[in-house]
Image (cartoon, rainbow, N blue to C red; front, side):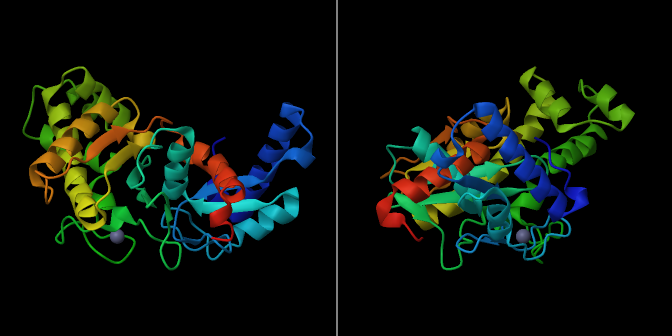
Length: 298
Ligand SMILES: [Zn+2]
């Protein structure tokens, strides 16, 4: 269900509790059989305490103890995790990345929002404060636009759905043959207009998507060089319908520039779970917490 974050955390928590109750009622199952509720949220957050700090795109969310607030209302155990980490858990649990003990799930949402869920040595890697995988803040252009983290030119402000539309507007100032000209004239051109045009063979649209994908690819190279993962899974709403272009470009950048590329092969794949990877992952988080004994308490 769409959230109305302009109403603040309390309203979203109310929506969440209502939706949970509606699902339990509709499923006609014994509530006592429910293991718990998984919530995937943008970071930064505290996975252990279930506290959401101040996500850049969620106004009025300041150190909200989401886990405790929701658990008190629904009466089930609650697991809160980063959306990218949830997506990685979902991919692993559903079989998409089962065979890879070391992989990264690059999660790209609609608008500004990007992260990486990390599986290292067959287990989730969360780091010392459970905020590992802030992939969107890898710097790709120090002279680029400001980022909410305080830096300039982080990946997520340079490579996102809004930035792609802005890039097409800029290109259209000098290119007059694109099918997007009519959309741009309305001032209402959307990301969907751009990727649909790219899929239909519009050269300008395709060129802009490929440039964006190669920027993503350069950041993926940094991550692979650092972590030596064997698989990079791409997923999230931004890749709806055009994931294949991103996959091809990122794979090519990796093949051409990764350290030790002659001695290892790193595979770039699209999420098998699809654009709802974070939501599926949220459910998988509960299974992961309750059915992975060696990880209980992490
Ligand atoms: Zn940043």
